[in-house]
Figure 1 (cartoon, rainbow, N blue to C red):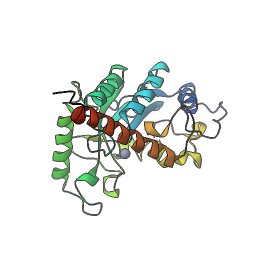
Figure 2 (figure 1 turned 60 degrees about the vertical axis):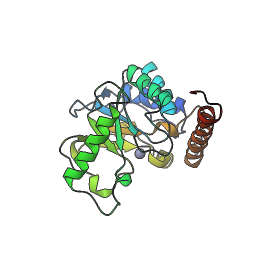
Figure 3 (figure 1 turned 90 degrees about the vertical axis):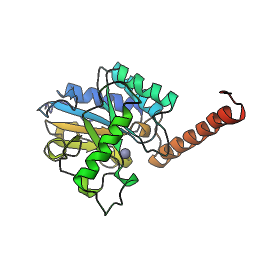
Figure 4 (figure 1 turned 30 degrees about the vertical axis):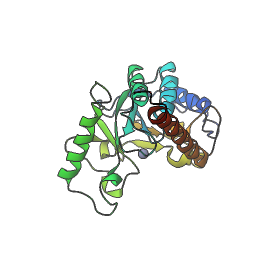
Length: 245
Ligand SMILES: [Zn+2]
């Protein structure tokens, strides 16, 4: 990739910084790929693990669509913060897909197995297949070929699985460049675009970003408070106001 670019300012977790980051990737020669594609020089897999909020994911999806960028959004089916089957969330997810992004599942092994007690390959494959098939109720389109693991335990890293493509398999992880904003670690260790390998996967978590900068803890707090007040409002409407009765 071209080295002719000065690097970005220190990261602030704002949409402005993120937009600039995407623009720099593009002007360095990168092109955005789907996980249907094989890794190649100049190709970047842009992946989003939606840990916090499909609504925030939609904000990022719009920003990317405006910038002419396509990405892959992966959703938890087991989040304490959102339910992808709920009407409004389903609408958010469908809108993300309609903007030209791929959507699929972000799989939490922790919901099924203890960290130090991994399942057999067959048991894992069956659970992933079951979640992927449940996701068909969210969106009537083929799920993204790649599955990512939530807070990945060591035993999923740097290996492939039968039956689905893992975003942590060697060809997508250790054999190409891999940068991630997990825990907002970019504040201390920002991605240096001029130093990135020619083939790349970038992971960002939509809920960690916003119009204004905020710390990791604040973003988690915002997601939890939003989810709680939303649950209260919807439950009140459904059970107390009796909107369906
Ligand atoms: Zn996650």
